[in-house]
Length: 469
Ligand code: ARG
Image (cartoon, rainbow, N blue to C red):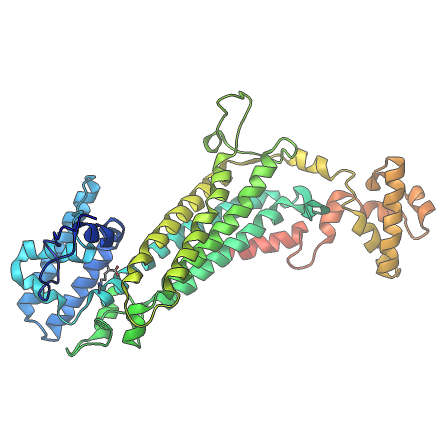
């Protein structure tokens, strides 16, 4: 600590202070390095607020016009500066809100000071953060939709591609590759639905709550809400300025996306290992080894899997920050943005890369079929055959188990037993049973709604198509 009192030379407060905060305190408290990302929403919020102040004659109409025009110009300037690769945000500003107001003052003079009438940074930041996340959330919904489309496209030709379905990571019953891929479709579809529902809840405008208690000025909050695309103004000013449920929920939704991405990544890692050989990932998403020339490593899948902790960590960080905060605004709340943006950037990148990785993935149908042969994943079908012929299922299960034992003892595959051989093991087993034990028959048999039969999966694909129209 230097102990030296330097002060914010451009702070928006200070009248009651003898001296300013020390350089260390300023460095400790500034948030511009993170909250610059609110710049566009903050300007849009200020424009809507200024229009309303003019309309309500809280400030003169020409003052409102000067502010609105000044802010519009600044918006265009910043856009251009960003596009040119410049940093439009002064590093010594307290936060993005101060930086923008000071820039407005430099542009239009002291009338800029009227913008903050009937407003506090507390309702301002809550509004800018919500609006930013609503916009980012919509963009993310589009990215998830693209991933959903990719999954459907990949699943479509694979309704008769058979691979082992697993429980306890042991071969259980065969499933189709289309069915397996579509399992992820529904996970990501729920994620998308969650984001859409989150958008509805988030679309509540804090602006007009002022510092915590509302304001003495005759605001038109409905007007501001409409201007900014919010559904309605908030009902309680104390809640509005201190609520961050929208951020928590957003990061929670991001965590679920990350978790689902991690699961499919894990499968791609396993499937691309030579023991499986179910998939070959494209060169663009794999890397080699600096020592072992033969290696083709699934780094992108591993990184997506490894980054799950970012979103979940951000959720813990944010929840811990919120816990125990008394009403209303507390400076702790400034800590809300970093974890959210960190999780968002990570998940968005992962969603994109997963789509790209799936697009280039080549599935090896023959290899999948090979692993089914003789794996006894049709033993349930032998039991089902007996049960359909009237044998109580528990008894049928026992008999089927004995047939499996017989095969293991004699080095046979269940599906290679002849009708005569089967009959010798149990009189109700016959040529019908033989037919039912073939891989495609096993698949076709599971024709329940939501089951893995090609016919059922085609219906599932039709439902999936409806969701991504
Ligand atoms: N940068 C602050 C934040 O993100 C803005 C609000 C500051 N308000 C205050 N009363 N100090 O929370």
